[in-house]
Image 1 (cartoon, rainbow, N blue to C red):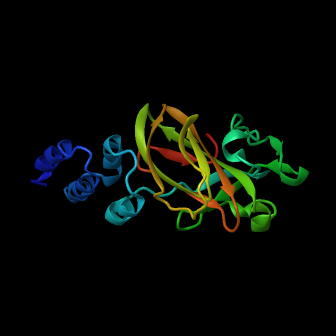
Image 2 (image 1 turned 90 degrees about the vertical axis):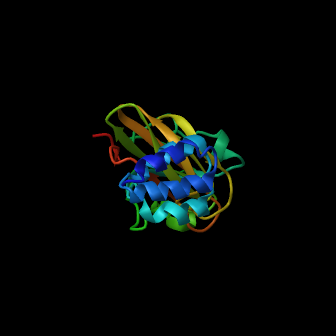
Length: 227
């Protein structure tokens, strides 16, 4: 702890050096500070840290759990550029009692899903399973409760491409064909006091599909529905 103040001073002078920030974050955590909360300060200076380095250097000392409780709906047809250009209904309407026209002239309904032990939420658990998720889009929704207006760090990843909104603001977009990485994107998001909607729109080409989502603030709690 005697190094705490000098480490804070070094942090303030670290500029945009990603590796130095990660080393200092580890050192400050050893001095009793919360690594999870330091991430928000880091990504104000480094908006897109390198995922593999982040996972390797600070992943093991982060305490916050993955968000596990969700409502999900699918599937919808993944026509050309549908990931970006087409709202199938859930983007503007959070009502989980509603149904929407889905893939193959079916009705898509919201269902409750829970993430696996490693934090991965499989979207191949919707009606029809993995076979029907091929060439399709699904949505997953959860809510974050904040005691006040604040900025928080979060990490996310999707399989394959995805768009992510927090409180109505688009915080991530990728059309890449890939596996989900829990640290694909580290983002600083603004939460208002009370409940904030989180919405994932995930496109699957073939094979497994799903997402990871983690919030690095012990003062924020998650729920599949606002309580």
